[in-house]
Image (tube, rainbow, N blue to C red; front, side, top):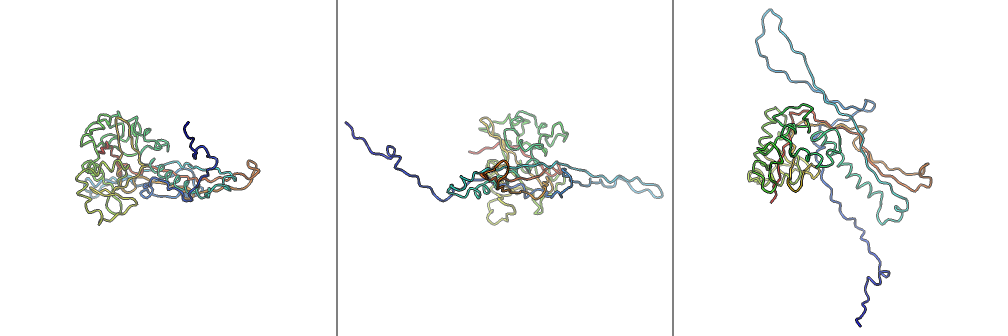
Length: 349
């Protein structure tokens, strides 16, 4: 008969586990939008509505002044943008037994992960001032944002050639299509046309729209481009991009995570930026904007971390510790002439 091997599986009761005391790194997305928002702090006891106001422009004189006769004067007018402050938060509930017996400090670990969750929450709030407004859930899933519009005409995106009526304002800023097609679903994912891809030409088209509307670039004289890394990868395939950025190592970077610039636009990328990818299509949105395109208002500071300890009526044995964060904030598009959203098909080969 064959030998019976003595193995670790037969004598697993003799084995013990060895645990590394080094925590594995967590891979978290970089968040970028908060540094570009028009930031305001809502004072205490001033209501739940954040309001931004601005004067409307006045056209130049169209006629000469009449001598000795009354000359008509226009009214000084202003515009108003409002958003309602809402609360957001997440947290953990830890037992005392777990805290006393775990190898690692559970409270510090909870605060570490909650800090990143809070940063991503602020990013999603900012996105409500650029992409789909009204609910943070719309910006939580790329499928919710784009899937229902894949077969819709450009006007359904509130296109630059359309109007800003509430009936077709699906996004906070007008859309620009990279493709000459009127529907994104008409583009083949495996071989999108050159015009459908992210390109320097498409970026130039968007910047031309912004400059035509007298949009103000950032303080450095450049607009900001915000997109998913996949969108940036497609853009960087364009040989013209390579010509613009061949001396990147000596160019000054102004923003956290800046990845290059072209046609008067500095680009930052984040996996938090919406992207729609399915078998038939992969679409990226590239938001390009200037000063005061969108605003972020917070109440009582930006993010508050809360640790709850001690017995109460619901925890008479003092067994639980809660670690949470909360933020009260609102975001809104402040000037639709200061931004555009470019819709392009990615092409990564």
